[in-house]
Amino acid sequence: MQIINIAAQFKRTAIGKDWGTTKQHNAAVVCGSVLSSGVIWIRSSWLSDTGSANDWYDEDERCKRDYGARYAGVDRSQSSAEDRLKSMGFAVYKVNTSVELRNGDVAGLIKRKAIFWDSSDPGTRVLYGHACDYHKDEDGKIVEEKDDDVDAQGYLVSELIRPALQVG
View 1: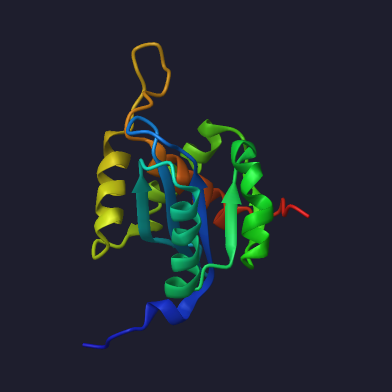
View 2: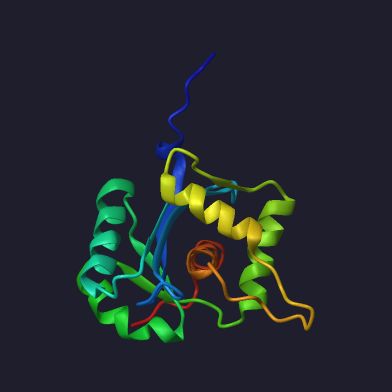
């Protein structure tokens, strides 16, 4: 058996962020990396209902320190975070505004068996459960329950797949 240091093979590591301040809408940061093959590894996930922006940015710093994250995917509702992220050393990218496109990106990776969730991270296990529960109602609308980390994952995946819209 050969042990492979997969972390040494990551070509890009980023975070996806979603802001929230309540138990119904949490703040979330998901960190992941992409291999040159296009396979994505979700490495950590964090949720908080405290409403503390400091905690939110502290998680960004942890992902930068622990995983080497250098890129951040944000949507237009997180645009107020751009300056702070840039001052922290992140290259900031605006992700596609279409939730259907982001969900399709993740679904395409699942279909190709090209996305993995690191089960050693407790937050990532929670994210995986939320992703499995993610669904639409009978009218075809996304049910927005326990989806904040799923949204942050979508921002992350979008950034890793198509990082062409760097801000500033």
